[in-house]
Length: 265
Length: 99
Picture 1 (cartoon, each protein chain N blue to C red):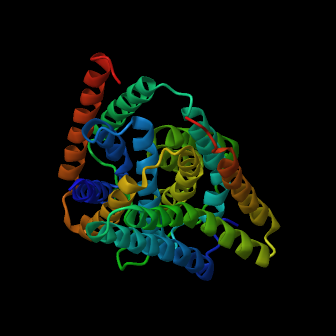
Picture 2 (cartoon, chains in turn orange, green):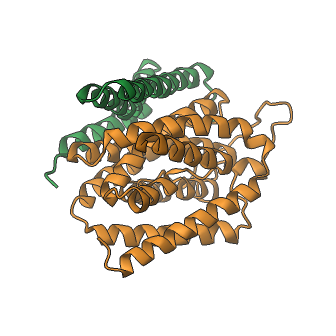
């Protein structure tokens, strides 16, 4: 029964993630912690597995469209993997309440960011040169590598801390500061998420913070949900889904805050 | 340099990710189905294999890219890939904790 619930949870997280372009990992950790009674550190480690699954599946699609800059991705991964690995190690020394508080703050911050952009989150919405399915990428040369690497270090650390992909940081950094076209930035960020999440997930696994009986049904659900979401995405009115996602995020942030105020763990 | 399009390179890396994602999906699914009929360690062990396969997929992806860069004599990006691989290995070594 629990297994079935986890598959369903993963399915909806994957579906919402693929429809909105915001990874479902941001929902999984708090729901596992609040509604399944899983210690938050295990919830983070467990949702990292789902994050890797989504990244692998969606990145293979981007790669076949040749919109991923593997060289740029690999270079920035030096920083994201380092940040993620080190942070995952440090998390072992963090208090559970601190983690829950940080997560609530992150959910609130992300919700505000999405709302301030009027619900526009998908890169493809703003830049769609694919009239005939062929993606035309203007020539570019990535710039300001030190800045990009620094921001990637932070994105990686956040990923290792909260069990998320960190796309909302990497995409704007590549797009705005490094002069990379938005489409390439999105595909490359997706590409990097797998390695970033793996760098911290390996640490969580070795520490015993990944519960396989929970991670497996969750990942199975996420995989099916994101495949369906990717197919539905062109036909679904994204804005409504984004507001649904923001609603859930705000609910989870409030729930975490109340949980903490009542004395936390 | 960066915008050089290499379809074969992209396809090879995409294949690694696709095979990894699908095989881990089916292994995990097999574990879940096994759990319906058998109790005990066997289903959990199958699920564990699926999780480990998923953790290994990005590592294999880096190894393959590293190999392809060196084969192209692209020393710079070959070394960068090797660096990423070293970081991943280090996280496996330092991931030991008794918490």
